[in-house]
Image (spheres, rainbow, N blue to C red):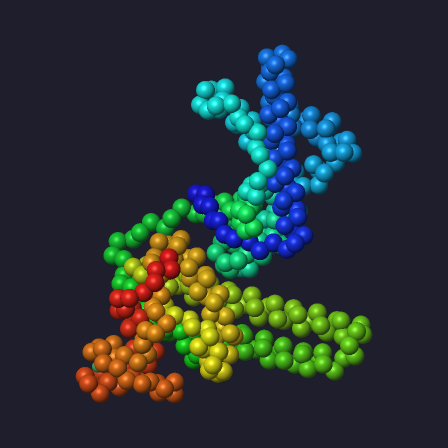
Length: 368
Ligand SMILES: [Zn+2]
């Protein structure tokens, strides 16, 4: 099943020039095809197919020095522009539409790309354009991208990709209740069923690798900057950084998969008030190390795929300071690990209490 994802991109000045040039070239080629067809029709009542035009364009027209710029833009984009004009003519001949009109110059336009397309959280790598920054991180799935359309809308730029996705997971009967997820320091996650997901920074593998990294970094600091030994050591350190990063990503994705596989009706997470968290150094450090933003991005992608609602409570929702049993409130400093309710006598682990409150929240923003 193919699905389209459209999102804004932040191209560099250089990339913007190439985007404008490609849109302009596609418009030129589209219009030239219409003109050539008109001439062919008037001269011999014949139709010039997109295929024949393409051959003429590449072998005769664009080989002239004055039209060399046609070959400076992605060839797949030019090819698609011709196919579009060809299709417009065929619709006209079948009397499905009026005679195709030439495209006028404007601030709007697009072109199509196929080929090697790689997606990362923050960028998309496109043929000829190279790595282009994505405005919304983590929205486009990393795997299965088949093609991309780059478009310009005034001074904004977008990419729309077609992604081959496995058909939707068939909903099992007896979908379980919702799940509330509290994100903590000690454990990465604590859900309303009482399950914890251990903080990945505490996994044995990560601890071991981090120790090795520290040792290798110390070694690097003793090397003479710029020397051969320094360069060699730097590669070792970079490789370790990458391994740790990949391992963390892997663990986060596994965690998300475990959550969605439980088939909940919805998942509710807390508001990640990053600014507020930065005031608390200990907390902000922990969150940065875990990469909680990445985790939420991936949760969005998977909830979409598994058709699970993803909810986020308001930043002022008192998930930690409210009794999940009777609703009364009290201050809960970070070091207090148990919620002991003075009103109903309920006593519950701090994180579990918060997770249950998140699950029960009636006010939330729907993320997915
Ligand atoms: Zn209570």
